[in-house]
Amino acid sequence: MLNIAVNRCVGCRLCEIWCSYSHHGAVSPSRSRIRVLRDLDGERDIPLVCRQCTVPLCIKACPAGALSRDESTGAVKVNRDLCAGCLMCVEACPRGGIGVGPEGYPLVCDLCEGKPQCAAHCPEGAIKFQRRDLADRDKKLNAVRCLGE
Image (cartoon, rainbow, N blue to C red; front, side, top):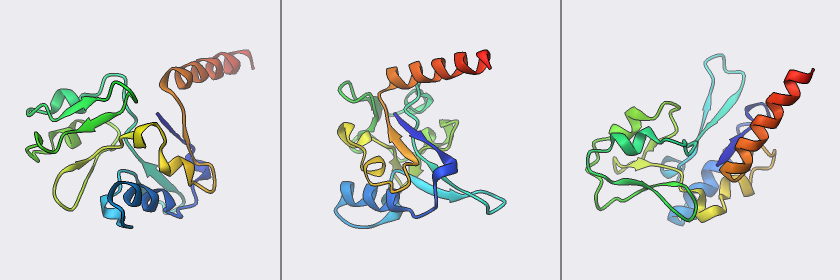
């Protein structure tokens, strides 16, 4: 899963550039699976990307069965051959992590087959890739540390 440190994001949008380039061979942020939005106060940039939920509501919401979990990477994948373009997955995502490409199909982070380019090229370290089991462990350890303070 991708861990986002919002306080480190400087809004350079290199994550969008690398995502679109690695998936489509061209710089096209509108086709990126990660999007950087400015908050309402205009004070910080917030990278939005699929959080690879433990129980993905997007998969359950898809009437065509076009979304599934990749067994090797654990990422949610979209089968465009099955996708009807209804965008129920976008509506079901509680964190706004699914975008819509110019063709009208959902854009869901597929973790670049375990080597996310957004994380590899983030100059500020705002995006980190971590296996879900390790991320869950780290969250629990941090919670325990906070209790001891």
